[in-house]
Image 1 (spheres, rainbow, N blue to C red):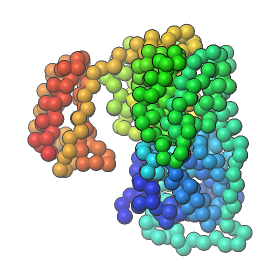
Image 2 (image 1 turned 60 degrees about the horizontal axis):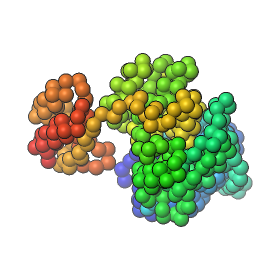
Image 3 (image 1 turned 45 degrees about the vertical axis):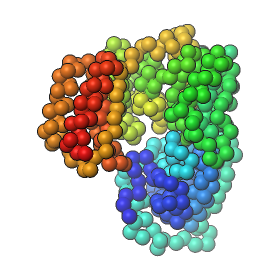
Image 4 (image 1 turned 90 degrees about the horizontal axis):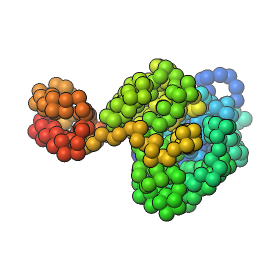
Length: 450
């Protein structure tokens, strides 16, 4: 068997390797064993999940595995991924495990592990867990009698997380009377999000908040905003807020029904933070997939910008290294490090609403702080993944495109981490030129690797 952990935990189709009950039980056992190395006391692990039907199977397999290693389990039920990170720290647990496949369809599921500090588990500990499982060593460790773990359900976990989120919204500002439409993606935010925004005074309309185990992310949420856009217009709301299945992403819709990306949300919030003296080191971190217009907007605001490889863990790594408090992805996974250790869709929404109340401007007006550059992305199937920088014909094509862009856009070529394809992206000053240059590059990649 190959590597278990990807860039965001273990993930796959539920009941097919690696997401089988047998493997999940061993992941629970190995995670518990690694957690017990930290200090000599009774150990405990928090487990939460989204609303997938397979969550019951995964939760019970994990629980059995953890208890079999002499570690107690705290169950919190359906709760956003960032809520589990918070509860792990709040309960002083040794680890937190989230059962979710994020924005994937319901038949998939996954396991993400947070350390006791609320950050995602370091690579070294993931490797240790993986090694214990793949070598079979974990099967020989068997506590008995009173050393076997116990299970407890934490009834007030949702209440604790609600208070935590509300405290990130400035006391001097109010959402009294603000019309908001929430799209909970039939996922993990369906209970907590409506309560949080209502208790802050907003007039809340909620859609896709009736999970049945199979409808999570189904034509709803942050990746499918059509219903939200229509409802914002129908309700004459000030803003629409769409979360993904596990609640760590936010995509917003303005009062005209137009979608704002994660880049636009970060731009608005970065301006607010800078003017309040809160933008540590005057820096925002994103990935290389951020729109070309994002960097231009930050430059205009006098804010420094750094880009990392794709993946929120790489964004967070650079944020911690460089001392940034705002970072994230164009997809809406945004980290406010002054408030939380991970991306949180609800906290991101509260910061965006805070900016709207501070500036007393409509969201469509604030969105104009960043002009989206036209973008064209094409996925090209490839037979092999040779280093792109070592293919002369491809590099020549890249230089040709960059020459024609004259600094008014950019080129990004990268292989998919999970599929045999090369992603070809071009951003430029006009739709026509961008598409033309992208297709030129696509042909070069096809000739070299197709």
